Length: 61
Image 1: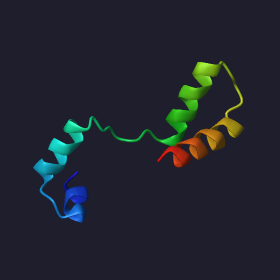
Image 2: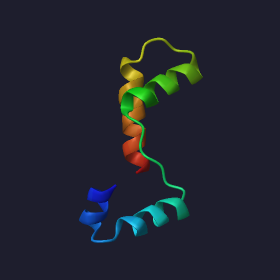
Image 3: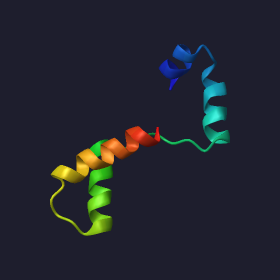
Image 4: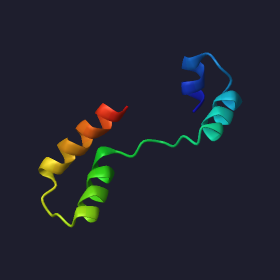
């Protein structure tokens, strides 16, 4: 968090306040997202799902 604030040229406390204000959270790693997607869909083959989820995340960012 401190490094992110330094890169943004703001105080760490300001960054924390903004994260809370806008209800932001850390990104989940792709494996966790893929696992979550598999659990929702009840699918067992995660190879294609991981790429699809990653692409969807990139498109929505």
